[in-house]
Length: 334
Image 1 (cartoon, rainbow, N blue to C red):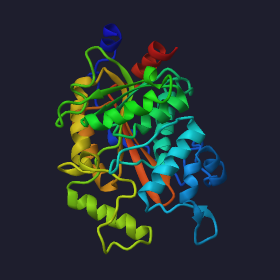
Image 2: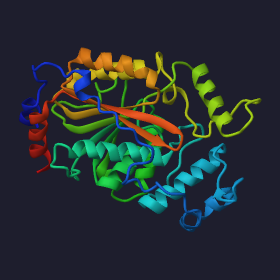
Image 3: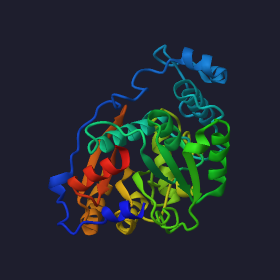
């Protein structure tokens, strides 16, 4: 590990320019490998998870659906999708924790797989090792990434209760604990430090950062969601996808969090092939790009994603040049 890590230390070559590396590709649908590109087959989902039936009814167009403003219905849909599509049983989260939309989370992983394949002759590596920053109580990225690609994962979080819930899910699915390790981040001011161990190597990191800058911003975002769902915001709105505290907000919002992540990644420049994060707000991108230039990364990408009317993107950066990335591939996966 030590020799491999030092071999790929931060190159002294000139940093990449934004115009060289930002390749934003407009996506109007989910990734081609995403299992959720079509309509949900509620008959099949109910067969797999009968509890979902209580939440399914005809919508205004006469199609089977659920009330996406109902947190219990969203959790039941997730349980059914994870069981039917990925063979994961016993998934659930405590009340108020973030309940992720599975199609969008799967999309992030599929685009990461394409990114890793670039240095591997176009082949997605089956032996990749990933670090999920802020895995939450749902553990969705390690669960999907292990099932879709057989990757090994470390999931980190500052919340012991969240990690305990993910461990419960792992224990309910034989073999998952062998592929997914959970680590507590002891400091809320650190991201990689205290999680990445000495001489440890990851092929990719991923993160769903806290998007909002304050609790009031998070509440306003929830009210907008309710308005889009055609619901009244006269009373205190429920969080249909949940989320609390550090899951939803931090000082400075996602831009500040990601800029801290970029600055800290410099110390681990030889420990990872690609660092990545979701970016919810396009207004965050200029500040993120400035942070990447300051960190003198060798390459970075912006990959646009879309799920229905919702658009987001992931930003990826690396401290290795193209030849070093090919060497990484040969050393790690071939």
